[in-house]
Length: 315
Ligand SMILES: *[C@@H]1O[C@H](CO)[C@@H](O)[C@H](O)[C@H]1NC(C)=O
Ligand SMILES: *[C@@H]1O[C@H](CO)[C@@H](O)[C@H](O)[C@H]1NC(C)=O
Image: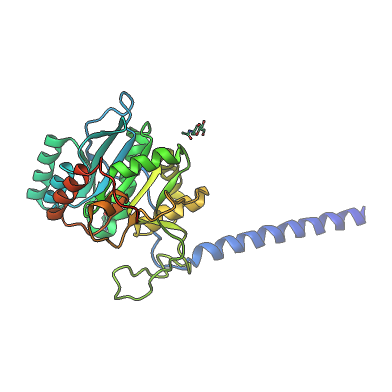
């Protein structure tokens, strides 16, 4: 009996020690948070749509949806895009639709003008976050949410900017040739990028915002293309991924978590995030080119469309 009693005592002591240890660990973790402020977490349900475009994807699913980030002031750029590569089109019988992504502004006049523009063209997707450069992640995620909620029937999605030239003809051709329908993500691949720790740089990222030494593989935010199933997956995983204001890196973090690999669209370079001097033959064989001024867009586009049937000399 005596032996049994001491055994019970020992057991009780042991259990108490374990419980005490667990409690200590719990309190030490919660009282000493390493940061003064809570890290920002992306919330999927945050914000309301202010403008939605007029499209029924269920009835008439597009092959490719182009989502173009722009700001309120860039009305001319939007007009130019609507009249060039963003014009609704069928390429090889595949329907292509372009929508513009916008946030909100405190400027009442600009808000009004954009609301009118939306009523006229029905091609604006807008939510009520502040439209600033460092809210681009929110803007991109709004586009991804819109695909997930309103247009999962689309085959492909491209996210791009308003200072880009997009050759939808070549893009469609390459996507059809690639013959991929799911788990597909392509663009200008950035596989070895590091956070910039210089405070004076535009893309400075603090160790608080991103503590790791290296970025995950991602595609340049100037233009990337993915199968529409990726939109829903990125949307679902986004809340459990550390938030970063660089939208292309954020999407890269989501893809890494989803184990979706980035792929080249073609054996030759077709995405030009650093720009490329225009020539008709050159632009026939590219998908996207950065740094195109709105005033040059129309002539480049017309030159491209007028030469669709022409052969170019082999390079
Ligand atoms: C982003 O938008 C949110 C919501 O409107 C706003 O509170 C925040 O200040 C904006 N962030 C930046 C960096 O402008
Ligand atoms: C595309 O892929 C599917 C299966 O993934 C295959 O059945 C079909 O033949 C392919 N088409 C072309 C044109 O390669």
